[in-house]
Every structure is written in C-alpha cells, then in structure tokens.
Amino acid sequence: MGKMNKPAHIAVLEARQSMIRVWLAISAVWVAFWLIVAALVLATFEPYNPAIVQLGIFSLIVATPPFALFAVGAVSRWIFETVALRRQDR
Image (cartoon, rainbow, N blue to C red; front, top):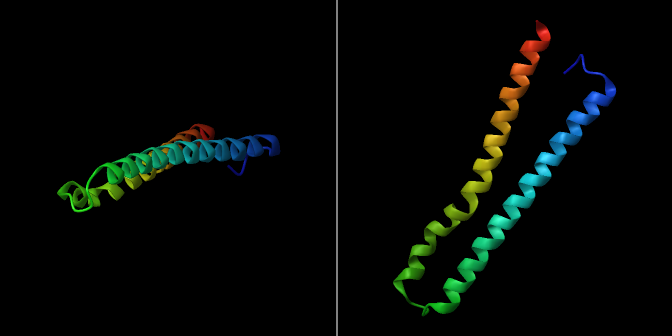
C-alpha cells in the first residue's frame, strides 16, 4: 500500500468504510429481528414455562452471525490484499 497514489488510497479507505457500514446495517437488522422474536416469545409464554429457560442459547444466536460475518469480511480482505500485493511486486 506504500506505492499507492493519493486518490487510490482515499478510494481504498472509502471502500473499507462502506463495507463497515454495510456490516453495521446487516448486523443491526439481524439483532433487531431476533430481539423482536424474543419479545414475542416472552410475551406469549407463561412466566415459568420451561421453553423460556431454553432462551439461554438465544444470545449465541443473536451475537454469533454478525461477528462471523465481520470475520469473513476481514479474512477475505486480508486475502485480497495479499494477492494484490504479490501481483504488484511482480
């Protein structure tokens, strides 16, 4: 990245910020959807129903996919930059 000119460097930063915004939007929709589902489940079941105890795994369902999506994006960016830098060195 040291050999890049100024406009190209700015374009890379803007693309990175765009992808983070997309990730934030998808994650927000995902978490909001599951919070609505949890609210409906809690509102419809009786207070001491055994199904409510099963909601312990709920936090895993809500939190894991956004972080997994972020990790996949970070790894794919790392691979892309590695390949691009190798091609520039040739």
